[in-house]
Length: 236
Ligand code: URA
Image (cartoon, rainbow, N blue to C red; front, side, top):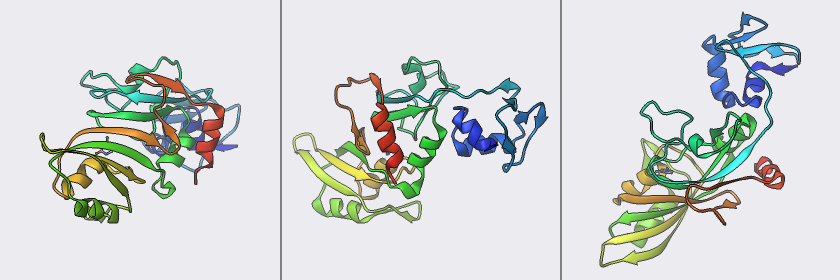
């Protein structure tokens, strides 16, 4: 016996949260009957459908992509832009673990494992993400300190961060800063720098937990090793 939303996320239909929405919207049926309650439990022999399409358990797959700029971090795009899914050759129904902005490059995980996605994206898990940002202007050390202590974005203070000036280009009035954050709020890094007066003009995520972009060129990807998957599961 397994909860319906867990089954759906295990099948790679969507994350656990998204699967709950599908159920509440009345889009899920079990043995031909619409189930719109979250506590419903299913058996191995039950036939589960989403929007009338049969859902089966899939083999779990895990990819690490070096996302280029001008690629959208969604499964589909109604404006016809290239999505991160388009870059990966797989038959499995994968989805990105969190998001990178359209104009942000760097490390993005993709999987059909809803449990791992929930675990990694849950705010309480504090997964470290490292970004390399090119800024307009010459950043002051006092602003770096502000960022590290936490700045107010949309009325909420950001968690403690670490930031380091990597390069100052006085001639072109640009700064290069590495910043480590544990949250994943919308446009977080850009908004953090904006809050202390700098516009991010280029952004790249270089690390996600213990993972980095070693041996990958922009647009390339690789499968995670079973050991890496196990290690991601053990991050708490
Ligand atoms: N912060 C941003 O502002 N953009 C990203 O893509 C990721 C983190």
